[in-house]
Amino acid sequence: MKPLLQGCGMRASPPGNCRANARPLLHTTALPGRRALAGRAASPAESLGMIEVLKELEALREENQRLKEMNARLIKEKAIAFEAPAATTAGPAIAPPVIEPKRSSGPSTSPSGSESPLARGIHWPTPNEPNFWDRPARHEPFPLKLEDSLQMNIEKDSIPLHIVHISAELAPIGKVGGLGDVVSGLSKACIARGHQVSVIMPFYESLDNDQIEGLKHELDFEVPKGFIWDGEMRVCMLRTTMFSGKVCGVPVQLIRPADWNACPLFRGSKIYGGSYDDREAYLYMCRAALELLQITGQQPHIIQVHDWHAAATSMLYWEVYNKGGSLWRPRMVMTIHNLDNSGECRQDEFGYTGIPGEPYAHVDKALDERTIGHNPERLNLMKGGVIFSNAVVTVSPSYARDIVFAGAGGFLREVFNLPHVSSKFYGILNGVDVADWNPAGDPVLPANFNATSLEGKALCKEYLQRGLGMAVDPTKPLVAVVSRLEGQKNPGLMHAAAYHCQDVGAQYVLLGSGSQAGPLRQAADTDFKNHPHIRILIQYSERLSHLIYAAADMVLVPSNFEPCGLTQLAAMRYGAILVVDFFAEATCGHVLWSHPDYKLTDDGYCAQYFCCSNLRPCATEPSWL
Ligand code: ADP
Image (cartoon, rainbow, N blue to C red; front, side, top):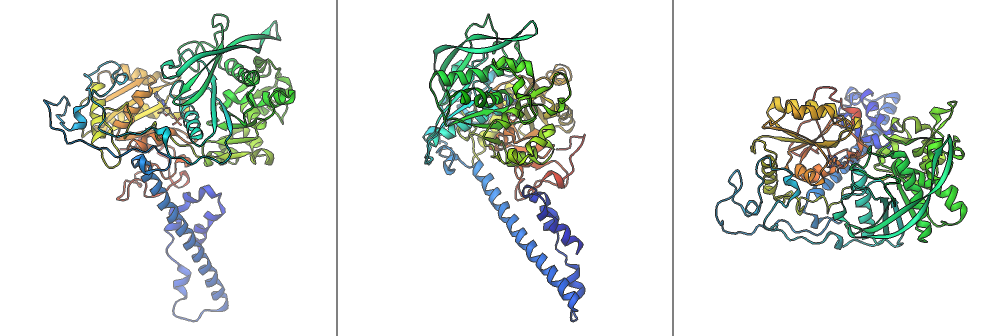
């Protein structure tokens, strides 16, 4: 009975954990009680036991069947993700590569001597050519037929809504991580489904204005803004300027102080951690966004606020604008991309919104309960955002569960666990924009490819090796990392990985930026300076990231946790094998675990579905090769 009962135990665990126990269940084939009973008449007690066993067996069979079906469905989904997008419902209609049988015209410029039509059009970089990724990679057009991704045949939703996103990031013009990707991809997808969508965000000095169509100054307006003077909060009016334009078809409204000499918020070369105070800047953004909606007479159905930066919008909306009657229609949706930063905020700092923080300092509002009894007590913006929003969306169903029921909510878990709060949570699995992340038509790549035509991938690898001045060697596995360099992402393991790759004869390319770049930068300047096989690039570049995903044989994601992880999705889309250190359930079924017991199989790396609970993390030693 014991093995069976262990197998059955999985049904008592939360729904999301069922995959975790798939292996013990599938391995439960022996029925000891049954064998012992063979060959003689069963006593009534034995018969009862047998009935129980048979019932258990039946239940296990059903469970097994369900898991098999899920397995098949996920494999199919993975296959679709790699197919030419023409075959998907969500993707753009793109034909598979049509390689013209052109005759070779002159010597090939490929370092490895490839003379295929794909290789012939490539504008090969000279070794160590500075920023080669910023110029076109081909001097001949792709031998592919591409169709406009926004002309996808997507069914319209029956009730068109007016949705306004308020966000600190938007890809590709102002992106630091997945937040920017999601706001951009989600907006495009909603527009394609017939909704009216716009994004209000800061007009950072560092924005890539070249990618904003029709950028124009729209209006100036006054925004109430608090400042501390002689220990007291005073409120002034800050003249704010708004520019409008479109980013990849998504209307944007960009706001910033009109006079940067008087107030430098959003000025400088960095989005976060630059020359201004982030908390002050984003509290001002929240107030300015609501003022903008009010003075332009917009009454969206939904205002969707993203992460702590925009959380105060929900708090201000209900207490000031909705109560005051100027904005009456919107309902607030808060999206939690990552609780790693929950927006700690002093009560007086909240005054940067022009509204005092004291009224929010209650346990049932935005009070940071860890500070109860402190003088003064503090606020937490993420908590305020959740309390004051009508619905809360997390970037994956498992992250919603982890936040509410497991440890990911941290000190906020108790609040999120309250029935009236937890009932507002929805987990919606992130996706990548399959038009932007499309190796079959990505204009950044020197050669394109898809799951059935992989020549282009080999050329991308050669192109990157050559451009970065590495040894051009198709036989060396190329391991890549593209990541923010922050604690969550485990930069220590990325660092160790560089040495490990050197030891085992692999190549390694890291592209990253962030507050914990120091040791990696140092390794780049010393141990790996001009190294033939290792490159550590401390910078941010969207274009280079596409090239790296396309060139990589493996992509390493050693994060301590991942609410979802767009890096994983991009890597898979570009045909790289994922190697992860921590298994985020959100990406269940999509990753190759580095544990030696779980190798590639004939069915592909996705043949089985694991979860962290039945796998040992590979604690300190990188062991993925
Ligand atoms: P997070 O949002 O926590 O940073 P995700 O994996 O969800 O993690 O998304 C990260 C996104 O940011 C991916 O699109 C990744 O390619 C991109 N990215 C991270 N660092 C860099 C970098 N230095 N240069 C270019 N893109 C980067």
